[in-house]
Amino acid sequence: YKILIYMKNITRKKKSLNVMLCDFSYYNRYTTYSRIVPLGIGFIGQYAKQKFGNEINVSLYKNVDKFFENANNNPPDVVGLALYYWANSLNQVVVKELRKKFGNKVKIIIGGPSIDSNTNQQKIFLTKLFPEADAIAINEGEIAFSNVLEKTLGKNENIFSDPIDGLSFLKDNEIVSGKPIGTSMDISKLDSPYLSGLLDEFIETDYQPMIQTSRFCPYTCSFCVSGKNTGKLRGFPMEQVREELRFISKKWVNRKNHILRLADENFGILKRDVEIAEEIRKCKEDFGYPERVFFYNDKRFTGVSRKVVEIIGDMCQFGLTLALQTENPDTLKAINRRNVTNDEIDDAIRWASSVNMPTTTELIFGLPYETKSSFVNLMNTSIKRGFDSILCNMLFIMDGIEL
Image (cartoon, rainbow, N blue to C red; front, top):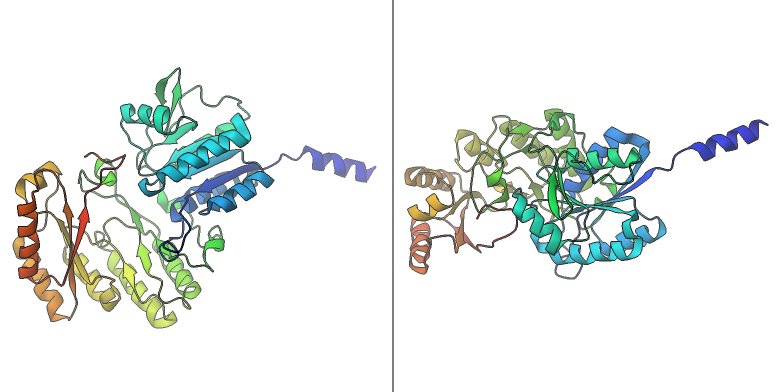
């Protein structure tokens, strides 16, 4: 009798929702050492696990073949795709294949920086680029994606009938949008996917580590996705950041050629970034990793930014980097950008030279009102100023940017 009751209880247990989150990369001999730990979907999965616990099963994917192998063995209920411009075609193939294999049984949500906040662009995206997708998440994805999971767990067969906060979808060929989420995620309550073990399978591999210590960019550059966002600069809890840095340093110590990347849009913009820089330096001294760090300075290059660069020192991948992009006055106005002054640039280069640190600038060719002549003049000026390296990038127009 007890055995029968036990068996009945087992059958009553709900099957966990199968959630598969993807940040796909191309896998070939050229990409072996350029693939990064999928921190973005790690955060989304982490938030979902914190909210729904054992009601959901979350798995993360970079490799398309592995994704479909697992999906065929255990069909997904919800698939989330992180869309970046370099994997647009790859994601289109995946979405079509998902619909072919699983029909409407799987819910497909797409998010990432290539998702535009403009509703006209959203309609084009959902009708022409990804007509098989169910919905798109606008801006930060943690809350929006968890709203989909909550509706799905509620057994609502057609969850895309009424607006869902943070998402847009098509209904009767018109865009339906929920309340904007924007950059409202309280990251002080978002645990680390490194420390929770969610990213474990990407650690003992060729993947490069990435960490994020803060979110939001206050600048409005129209060639960048972040330039359209409004919100508040937020930092992850300091103790969590310290633990993550120590964790990564211990795990990657035998792969010292791997660069530690900071996903902050302006590292050095917060006063506490000095403490984080000191922790990075301490990790190298205590564990032997990292030997190289890549990050973007605060565009203003304040005293805090200078202190950060000074502490990290020879670990900076490109030394002191001042990304000018352009100095054409008409171009700067057109792209909503204000550079550091000439005096500030010269002072920064002199300071870097005094501490034997190389200097780098980044330039973008093809911005509005930029010409061949003005760009060549900028390169010549950069050389005369004393920059050791000039990184020239072509402007590319991608979905999601104001330009």
